[in-house]
Image (cartoon, rainbow, N blue to C red; front, top):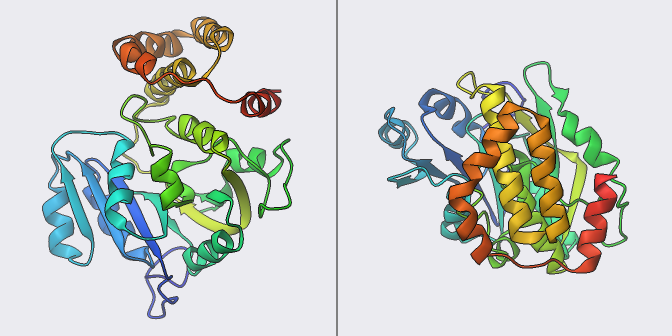
Length: 292
């Protein structure tokens, strides 16, 4: 447990009531051994088929952590598995290289309870030892959707998976993170479905998550490829045909990594089409407003 953003300390904040931290990871044993002790709530680690001894190392060093060891890489679906296992009112997501600031798990749960329509609370994310604001947070803070009276901050149609708290029942009822999109870019389809069901998503600047990106990250081109794979599959599952076409055309024009992403989406198109469901007009209108 921590009392600062940078290391363990003797004092610890009270354990928040009704919160579980769910962490998904693959082959990042050393990152996990450093970050898991920082969490101030019970932790469920869902391991995506690691081959570096993660499961044994965490079980030996941190016996209080519940480890769910998957045989294969389920992508972001691992978070859904962890949330289903948690059995608490709220689930706070973290990655193997992120953690919630001291006291802010409890603070986020208080905000969630005070706003019963809120399904996803997006925290402020500070990146690296220099604690610079994640650029996406600056965009979320100025969301053109404004701040509805029943939400604690600007309304959103997306969030950052490593720094959000969800209302578990709403998250699971919306299907959680699905097996088609997988990772990264898994947040969009879930956000759209939550909004379609009447739930709210909001950015709350008063709550902080620290993110120190792992040195074992994939190269930027590979990430762009994976994001565009997710983007086109989400479009197929939820957007009107015209928007699907525009997404494909944008990917074709963007560059080689994006075109590879479109190609990598092809094997999953049948599964995406089976899950296709049009969104309500008001959600599509909000999406277009956010897109400018």
